[in-house]
Structures are given as C-alpha cells and as structure tokens.
Length: 427
Image 1 (spheres, rainbow, N blue to C red):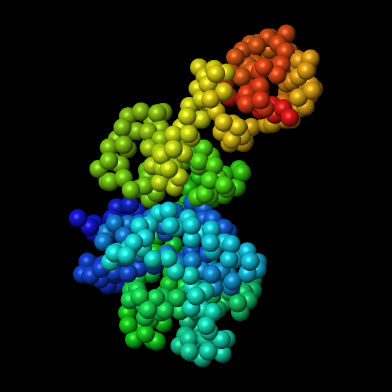
Image 2: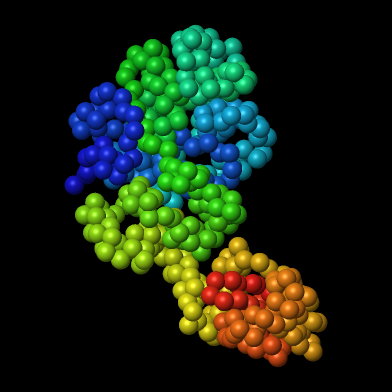
C-alpha cells in the first residue's frame, strides 16, 4: 500500500514549511512533484541526498517524481545561502556537470513508463527558446521588484551587493514550476528550506500566468549537532560517486557520525521503517560503545549509493585496518586502492625501491628517511617500549625492512602504539 507521504516525512523529521492545501492534494490524487538540482559540479554531494530522498519517498507513496537538472539556472547562479557572487561556469563545463548529475539521479529513482515513473528534465531545453525581451515581457512583468527584494535570499545580499543576474534567479526557477505545471501537470515543488523564497515565486507564477494553483513544502537543511558543516571532512566534501569519494571513505563518514546526529541521520538518509529504527535505537542505548545506529546507517547508505559489493569491500577494509589482531596476510588481501583509501588521512612518505635492496633499518624508516618520528632517539625509545609494528607485527630496533615486506609490491604499514599509523610508499 502507498504510504501517506507527508506523514512519512514528518516522523522522519524531513518537513519544515508547507503550503496550505498540500497535504490534502497529496491525499486525493496522484501528484507530480519536482526538485531542482544545480549542476555546480559533475556529481552531487551528500547534501543533495536529502532532496533525492524526498523524491524517493514521493515515488514510494504512489506519486510521480521529476528530477530537474538546472542547465539554464546553473548558468546564472542561485544566491540562496551564498554570501558572495558565484563564478559562472562556461558551457562546456556546465554540459559535463549536467551529464554527471543526471547519471547520479538515475541511480536513485525508478525511471519507467508507468503513471508514477520518474522523469528527468533539463530546464535549458525550454529556457533556450526565450529571448531576453520575451522573458522580461511575458514573465518579469508579473512579479514586482518589491516582492523579489523581500525574499531572504535577496535581502541578505542587498547590503553587500547582488548582481541583476543572481537577483533574477528566482524568476527563472519560478518559470520552471510554471513550465512543468503547464506541460506535465506538475503541481508540487520541494526543496531545502533555503529555497522557500524561490519556490513561492514559482507558485505565484503558476497562479498569475497559469491561472492554476501550485503547492510546495521544504525540508530542514541538515546540520551537525556540533555546529560544523554537514557533509564536509578534512579531505573535502563527501560525494555520491566513487571517483570523488571512495566507497570506503563514504562508509567511514557515516560510521563516524556522532551519537547526537545518528538518530536523525538514520531517519533522513535510509528507507528503514519506523519500528526498525526505534528498535536499533533501543539496542544502541543499552550498549552505546557498539555504535549500532552508526553501523546500520553506514551499511544502508553505502549500499544505496554504491552497491552491495562496494559495501562488502568497505567493511572488509575497515575490519582489517582497525582490527588489532589483523596480520600481514590480512593486509595482503587488500587492493592498492583499498590501502590508499584506508590510509588517506595518515602521514605518508615515499622512498625508492633501491633503498630496500640492502634493507632499510627500522630507525631510518621511522625518522631519518621519513620524518614520521622526530628523531632517531624517539624511534629508539618507542622501539624499546615495544610500541612499533611493521605490517601489524611488533618489531625491535634491529628490524630491517626488505622487499619481501612490501604489500602489493608498494606499501609498508608502520605503527606506533594503538592509534598511530604511517604509510611507507615504495616506488
């Protein structure tokens, strides 16, 4: 049975502002609804996973989702949530980005010919037909400057300066809603809470030009409990494609979310049912150190964004890298990419293979050749305290590294104590 879409979003804490009549509309008919995605890069990061999940829930509730890629609006730049003017992309970059974003979206929705089959559209396809004069005459005259200036996305930028290009963005997004209303009977627009101003401009155009009624709601922007930006790590944004963020790094991101954030994230970013989530939370409360919510969250999202095979690989890599009882044989099971991904954040140094012809003494490997430790003296002290390992095995100060120690003919993993790892790359 199709679910009650709004109720589903409400218990998942994915509902913020909602236009009157929206819930009633969704209860009485199959509704076509859309979300827009800006092609600012050739992939989408995990912030975009929230509107993607909204479209997934819309389709699961028996409605028809449209994913709109902003080939035209991407040329202008949305001022919402921005403090500065955005650099405009050239057409070649934009086309590459549109293609990349489209590929990502096709992984999440069911595109078929049924009444609820998802549709992918690019607003450049209809905006390219407009001349500037036609647009300001046929669209611009219906919305006042006062109305546009009152929007938060514009108001916050008026003092520091906003170009006419970005000022007019809400008209372009508003026209998308009107076009989809007229051509595809689309009556609903969804987006993040920072999009409310742009979305309501669309409902105004549907009313004033289309002589119809548009509906809308937004979801809260995802923030982290500690105030840091969601979806960012030391190495940058967390992306939805493996070429930009490896499945291992992706899995680790979710595995490492805080206990404060995990209950909200498992509601927002998975399709698990309410009863199952509450059961996981109850188990987690009884043994927080096992991080059961984070583990299930990481499993579900990695599987959805990548696949079962990628999840299995990420779990295997995690188990080996963080298992105190792992052996050199376990490390040899990992691929070169697994090792590079797994140790992306640890200190690394490169030495020549020639250095291993006669063997590389462990003290040189820790200090003089790599700088992993500050001095030979520190290296000796740590070795004396039985704190140093090579490829997970404890060693003493007489240990010499030879080519036989290489993992995948390229790496040696050095360790100090329980938590400090160093990756020696041999080329």
